Length: 582
Ligand code: ASP
Image (cartoon, rainbow, N blue to C red; front, side, top):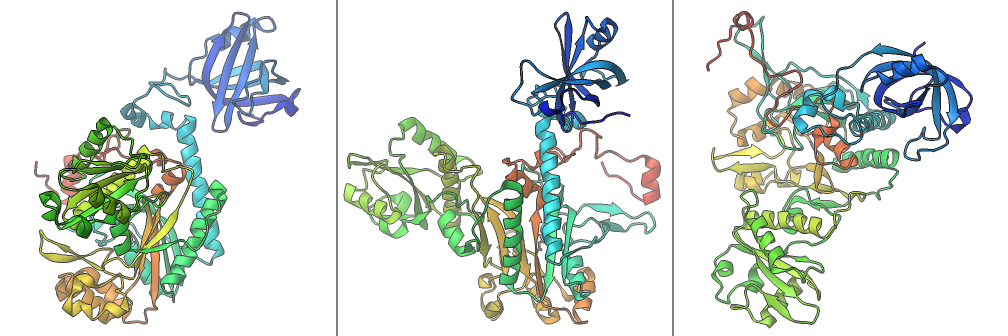
């Protein structure tokens, strides 16, 4: 028998028991007469004691144990004289009577403890060692628990988990496809799903009514902290639903997860904000509503005083940072540098301080009187002690930059509490997005998204104004999921493809199977997909989804542990009929 208990099981009430434990040696400490070994497994750490007086041979053996050796030890549980309140087994230790090395270990390349000296690359290369560390292990356990709760909730709502194929053809989610060459069909390729979108819609045509799947999706795009080439979605679809039916169902899922995992009750219904409104107020379609500091339009009130930066700009707007009027020159310079970063794109920053003594000071005193600036303040709801930050330029770009500055100020003023969660729905996205470079419209969500039916006439006159019946779930500034009511009518689907610049042939070639299915009684349907990795990361208090994936890829898309992607042997390429151009 390898064990009677795990390394996390034993408590004071077990004192006197005869037990067997197996696990890894985290560290051993030698005090001459006694040797202490911390034995670790997934469940915890238990202290083993070897006594020189009672069994010198065994104690000698214990002294030779290296870090990460795998051992089995048997002995008696006793209450410790000096307790360790930091671990659950801290009240007891095992007086070892027998011990056996099950497997030796090389010296690990970094310390395998709560904190480690291992750098990112090294830990990725030896990910299986990194996973032994409690913080990484706990992330995987959190992920597991969330997956179980998702299944529990959706099953309870009558959803059925159905697997869809991985070797398919292109799905239009806006990224590049990963492709797989077919040996049996030379010169032909499968694409890996960017999502199971078309399949879940086919399952609705098939009458499955409520579908879900926790599923791997693949998108070949540039990577960031919250992106991986393969990632997991909670993918869902329902029949005979309108938007509110979908939102209510998945508010239920979110509420269930908050309650089951974090023990938090979030009030429902979640706020619903239109795309237009969130862009105006927060400069982004994924606003963080944990704090105010909304963007206010100053274009009209600030114009006409001879200040070219504002007079010549399409738009001017400001955010009001509460209690920050005391910001020093240095801090203001830092903020100016911040907005000038290429990824923010600001040209400069105007500041106005509403000081507590009633004075108003600003970087634009030359052009504006105190009375002028007071009007700005009124516009933005500034109070005594506040700092108003103003930017000008092209409308969208300036709102975006102000939105980023808002988040920066939110961080600086500690307004983004990790333990508070404010979910909301963003609705009424534009259906189409114009791309200057290619001179055509793209679907903002994907081509199967239904327009708001009252906007259909706009297809002819002003396609950019057509609103989509689409929605995103946003929590604390993170886009957790998105979906839409779908087009279920062949004619409307054709209009959509036409507006997206697909020729009839191209549409038939790529999505003929779906159009065909729509001819056989497609029910009205809609759905949503959640970024599972992101959701777990959010609940785990981190921005990096990599920390919540057992074997992630690095920012270059490599798995440095198994060393892939890798070249293929010539033989294999030949079989596939592929020649590589260097
Ligand atoms: N397939 C969509 C996506 O991956 C989600 C949906 O519309 O259900 O973003």
